[in-house]
Length: 111
Length: 119
Image 1: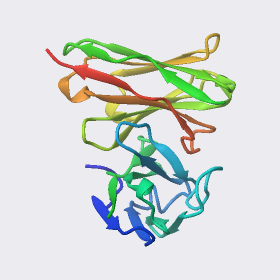
Image 2 (image 1 turned 60 degrees about the vertical axis):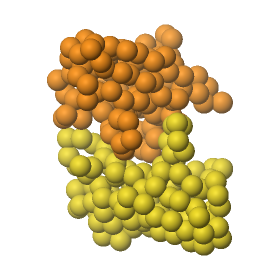
Image 3 (image 1 turned 45 degrees about the horizontal axis):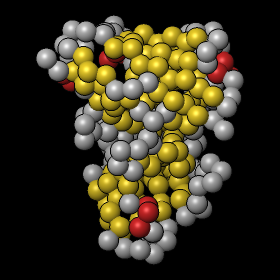
């Protein structure tokens, strides 16, 4: 059982927008602005898409955005494209002895 | 450009140990933390621990505290992760990933190393 809770799957059509939630506690998501989102295509290493809740690394499309409210962080992808189809993981720094926790991952299907 | 290149796949018997390497290039190893994250087949990501290559200090997830060791060799810009007392549940892809500080995101990842534990 993962420390952060994500929906197992979401889907959308090209051009649409989707949002993936990531729910934690006041010890992780709610307590720090150190929430990151990673995209992982099959057989590949994860890729950083959003860091510190809302920031995009250089080279990541502005169709990806992040936000947080209380203990829940969210990743929104607008203008869905077929190449966005992948697994998405949230991650947060935590006060626990684990230091970093991940969500269970969300499989995005672009129909 | 920044690259993290990991060692090749390993097959180990239960009870054995495995040592995975992660060679960094394109930046100064001692300026960034290195994390280890694993992914069991069909499962999510799991953080194992981190090392500050500057001084070698480590922090491990409680789950792995008794079985994992992370070390660095600044002369070769390489970080190593050794996991002992292997069991079948340790079968996974192991990734190294860089972070500027202990609470910084993982901005570059290695390609992953498959470790299979089987009798």
